[in-house]
Image 1 (cartoon, helix red, strand yellow):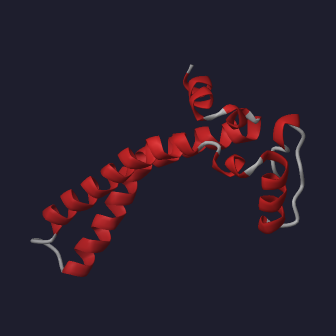
Image 2 (image 1 turned 180 degrees about the horizontal axis):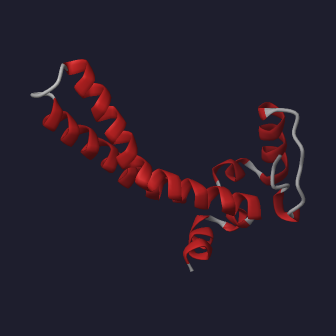
Length: 115
């Protein structure tokens, strides 16, 4: 289901292709990128936390554990570190999408969610 453009009414789509075609036809190609600013602004810090957790855990565990176990544990810890930003921001983004506020633009949506 989509936001239905400016009207705010929900639209039911038969699939991804139909949704994309309908959105581009009614709202323009730019509508596919609404909310991109919020995603980009949070992706970089989340990726930084992910790799920081990965490197720190690898450095701490590789001398003590078999390489496969150390790598698995490092990946697990890295995912936890990155999720500290990914999960809250994804929750905010989804709520704004459901409420139709993301249609206004990333800056306004972020201000609404944190204001």
